[in-house]
Length: 461
Image 1 (tube, rainbow, N blue to C red):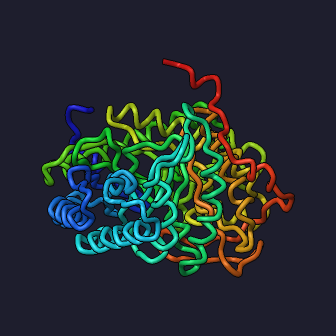
Image 2 (image 1 turned 30 degrees about the vertical axis):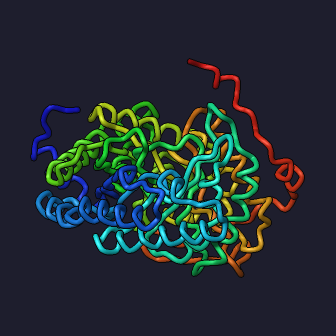
Image 3 (image 1 turned 45 degrees about the horizontal axis):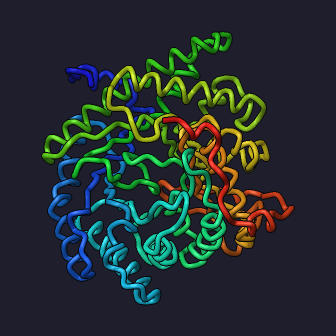
């Protein structure tokens, strides 16, 4: 970690970016709920409520104070907690109906706590089943449609694959149906927008909907997610059009360095004010719906007529690598996902490319091999078969498993919508065209279930 970060560095970054949408996209307080575990469900709930409220009550006020002092906007304040399947396991009785009800009640408790402390989202409603599912994981998964569909702030995740374990195809088949039900049970399918499927997830992710507080983390930590696509786009657009790509990468790297230094100061100050540990800084470029604040526009500034055309994957690889190098130079606490996000609904450049027909599901999948996450905020027809949803998920998980990287999927089948239609959620979730999918079915492949074995590279000790 840098020994000192001067105010001049921060103000230089602020002056440079005040019109380019630079912000701290998220400050996320991670809370360990393992001390709350009990085989008595009512005791578990009381302990959970007390722990969250006592730990996070000053979180939003302290973040606002730091934002005001340094003049750098903090867009989202979030909480992550220990995965629900871990916390709830001892309080489940074996009565499936009763236990599912308890899982839903727990989600509602988390939602109330998030509302009381004033955060935007609370993540961690999920579990891990890369090789198999425990009873608790099955029950939490079954409760997802009601737990996420009927709460406002609770976000969920499930890890179904890893490079060490392979892909749990039984769980993949099940999750396709869960996502359809999530979409049906919420307004404009927004429940599905609050749920992420992972391969190789990280435990210090400050971004939603996939954030959770990992078992290997300290009791309470602050993780920071920076942003700045608009800043990087301005820098790239200002370069000579005949400048070699390695020089473009160097310019991006230097810009990421400055952004990371500012973000680290915010994270250190917030952690200190709360009396908790500073975890890590995620240097991902997270786009918004604001004009110019787009990863797609950065790729076009490099020389592509439209993102999605040939060369888009190479351009994104350059961007992701340069951002990571700049962040690592600026801080020894770089973590989370780090790189560049490509969420279609949240990135005006990507959404326009989809509407123009330049960017489709296959090209997006190719681009996820080099970005920091995966298929993110993809709106698809509401009548998409559950086996098709599962097959898209399996493809993306395979990319993560084979390349030993984190991949994530947020698919949103919007009821009543067909390819070419449009859906709008407003706010940071933005809007998106409904993306066409292949019509050929994958039914028998998904119905085989079983386990997709880990690659030979998993045998490393």
